[in-house]
Image (cartoon, rainbow, N blue to C red; front, side, top):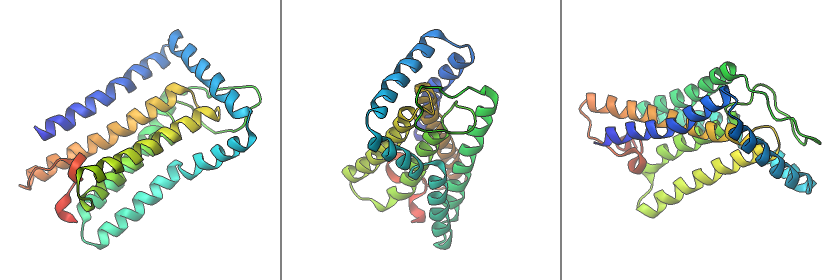
Length: 228
């Protein structure tokens, strides 16, 4: 049942990404109108406050993909040294798969980034899906699943998931506000990042069961609580 729930979660988060992918590839007019409307509104607000613009430019890089890769790598090294090699491998595989998948989809879709008057930031490469949003979603989820075994009580676990969600939403917002991504780019990035983590976590749980280990609930206990 728990593995089925994880599989359903993968499917549910896959739906918005697949829909957005189809709409972007087909140049769906309502989506384009929404993207342009949100981009204009967010950009106008940022232009009105240069200090806020500088803050967003710094913060969006502080929480960029490189940061999450480094944090996950450090966590994996720490786990490996403690003898928890299976979750360490899972973490590295997940963050690596996320980055490679993002590059692959960007190359296939090859969507142009927004072109706005008075740009306040710049980013290279294609636009869909957002690498920053996907990196934040993947990185925060991986770290939460590694930290959950150390937490006691439902409130502390919910608080940790809430922090991960806030960081991810902020990163997604910053990319749109700075005019380097469309709204649909960041939504797709977050959805795909969650799909990657849910998919690898489900695969990891299946591996555990094949080896006769007790079933766990990753959202509450982490990917392999007994290793901690």
